[in-house]
Length: 429
Image (cartoon, rainbow, N blue to C red; front, side, top):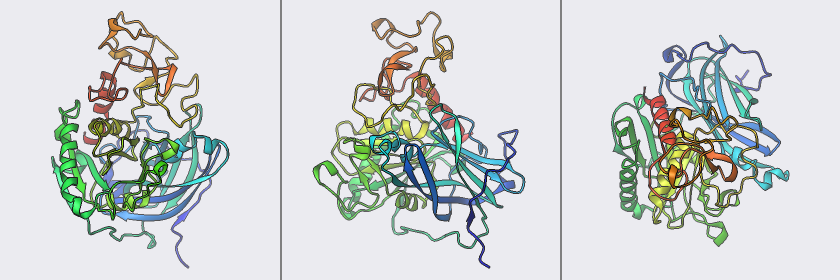
């Protein structure tokens, strides 16, 4: 009788670990477990189905921080040791599906399917994997459960896209003590490889010229995978342009012209698996302005636009730290992304439900009014300035200006900088 690769299970009581200090060697071995899923649904109904389960050679995470207690992300992955019911791994994250359910298409009831991957250190024994998603009140509700036996012979182990060369751009030490960034290329032909290398060097220099990345450079590794496409550039549907680009980047994602995402998740993960990584950045060989960043999924950036350096850093802020957009006048596709009366989970915006206890209260100087007038008297002060998260009213940012607001490399505000430093520490200490 063949052993089943996975089991869908009925919700069972589980015992949460009383401590976030889980001994890595007790529960995990070398490499990563990747669960590829199809995620289908509409705004008020969803279903998951397993595509493939894979053992990858590298897991780039921090074995000293296996439990994510930062309360970030629209979803959270939880992994339980099946024998003891102990929570042994968790990680908050966001998904394309989580953004898509806020657009008109999903609200109108037209279902779509997105490919997603769950990645965790490879377990020594059977595990229960659980996905929770925030509801409209920001309360996590379980939406999927499965059991995986790491001994199952159906778990794939082959190397894919083995012909691509890996280059170390910044090498500061072992992956388990660094933030490991992998840069993937899309829309670069083989004869454009030298342009790719020059582009990456320029972006890395820009990145490490911005605080707090400049001061924390020794906490980062950066690798480039020279993933080659047949054609240059990426898809631009509004102009009827479709390219044979390896990683599937496209403008007009979620029907927003400048938003550049990829729905080729499986290919992206297969290519990235050549190295240990915490963060994926996909660089598009493209002049048109655009980009995107989804928390713990990937960031995307164009290569040949006057604002490309800003896009690179701004989108990394989304991808790495879960920072929200602080602008409020640009067109977006989302409907009611932040329900009234609910405090956003993102660390850099607030609904200001309690002006006496702002989430960044410790950074506000005594005497600063809250809400804070957006005038010359309060320039460079931390406060609560109305206008953020695509809304001119009802949401507040901490500073008059920041990389998460304006299209310029003018620095991160103190609140965003603190959140970035906290995330760097999570990966490295």
